[in-house]
Amino acid sequence: MTAYTFDVLVSLKAGLLDPQGKAVEGSLPAMGFDHVANVRVGKHIKLTVEAADEAAATAQVREMATKVLSNPVIEDYEVLAVSAT
Amino acid sequence: MTRVPRIGVVTFPGSLDDADARRAIDAMGGQAVALWHADHDLRDVDAVVLPGGFSYGDYLRAGAIAARAPIMSEVRDFAGRGAPVLGICNGFQVLCEAGLLAGALVRNASLRFVCADVWLRVETAQTCVTRDLTPGELVQIPVKHGEGRWVATPEQLDRVEGEGLVVFRYSGRDGVLSEAANPNGATNHIAGVRNDRGNVVGLMPHPEHAVDPDVGPTGGQPLLASLLETALAGVRA
Image 1 (cartoon, each protein chain N blue to C red):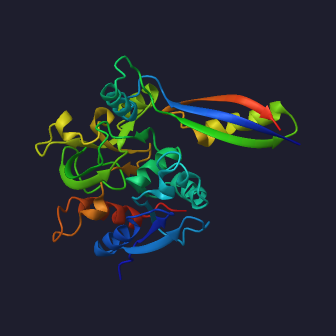
Image 2 (cartoon, chains in turn green, blue; image 1 turned 45 degrees about the horizontal axis):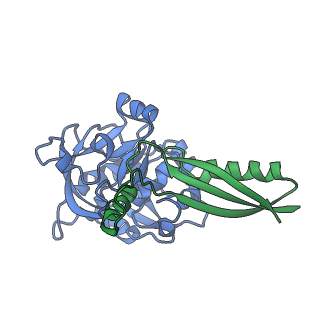
């Protein structure tokens, strides 16, 4: 068994109002950042899975991402950055 | 002697309104039964209430972890048999996360936590909490939430609207829908929805906080009375 580390990025679906992103965006001009648009706030979940190989580990993470780490009604996810240790 | 319906109230870590829900059920003539999230036992109840609060600190998403708690497998079977299940506020979030109701609850459009008495327009009497009510009737019940904006996929929304699954909409006290009367920006002013059979209902407002005339509006009474009657009528296996 090898330990594989993943980054799972979860974001609100495009088109769904993100008040958190809007609030962040609204605060930026006051700090001199005048040309920022489309701020969206999401989540970054980092985790390590032990599996026989990378494909098996990735399959598990994708299943977790679909079943619990994200809610498909409102969110999209991306599984990234595999590193074996 | 009339049988007193046993209504289970599930306590998750972080539930807040479980005690109020039990108190309201007892006040309305039912027998509240405390249920524990980590048990696989519904203690022979006639109906289940998932109360408000911040189960698991709203970690990951509101209701997400609670929806996968041990007792939820029993709640899922119970609902599948047609027995009444009511989710209030965080309980509504849990039911959506569990896939027992359509849609999801996300951050209020205003970004503000709202705490107010709101008017709800009843859209259907075909549920475990509206059998004593008539479509178009208005009830006043408080809301208190930061993530109560009901949203859904376009397919879910078509189904919910097309098949009469909306149970309550936020309205003015005259029954008119308006942005001003929508406390969280919910799609189509939706405050509560039901499943196909009407035995599972979730809503953001708190009927359990609206039964005692000494402390505010009493719009929660007909909902809980309906729940007790449905529980007594008994569809449980």
